[in-house]
Image (cartoon, rainbow over all chains, first blue to last red; front, side):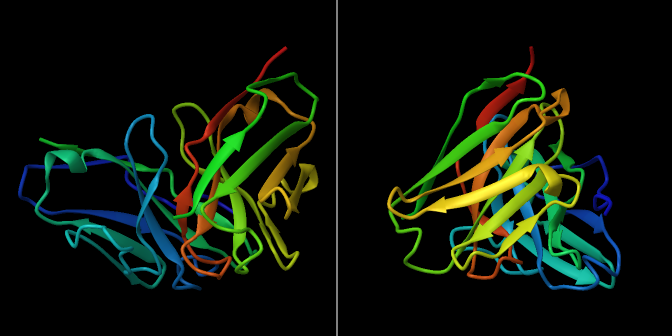
Length: 110
Length: 122
C-alpha cells in the first residue's frame, strides 16, 4: 500500500480559507468513510480534528471541516488564524485492514 | 478522562527487539471493547501506522511490519505492549500509543500518548 498524497505545503493570510487535499485510491479513501485529519504542532503529539470524513470531535473549532469525493478527501480551514500554522496529516482505513497516512502538509499563515 | 503513557528503553541495538508499553489511566482496558494501537514518526518525517490490538484478541498490523510485530494486552496492569524485532536504523522514531475515537478499529485515533523516542544504534 502507498501513502496518501498531500501537498507539501499550503499558505494563506489571516482570515482566509485554505484547503488541503488527500488523494488515495479505491482501496482506501474511496472505499471507506473512515478518513481522519490530524493537526501536529512541533514537538507535540498529533491531535484528531476530523474523523469519519467530516465529524469534529468535541472541542474542535468549527473552522475545520472535512469532505470527500471519490478517492480524494479534503480539509478546509476557514478564518485562518496564527495558531493554525502547523502540520496536517490525513489518514484512511484500507481494504488491507490497516491504516495509511498522507505525507503531511505544512500550513503557513502569512 | 482516559490518558495514555508510553514507556520504553530509548536506545536499542540493531538486530535486537524493541519492547514498548503503554499504560492507561482514567479507564479500564477491559471495560469497553476498544482497540489499542501504535503509530510511529521518524525524526522529521510523517506518521506511520504500526498496528492495533483489540480486547477481543483481534489484531491489525502494517503489512510492511507484520512479520516483526507482536502485541499483547495485560489486563491486571491496565496496559498493552508492542514488540518489534530485527531492528534497523529505519525503526528509529517517536512511538505513540493511541486509542480510536470509537469502538471501531477502522476509526481515527482520538487519544494519543505524549510519545517516546526510540533510537536504534550500536
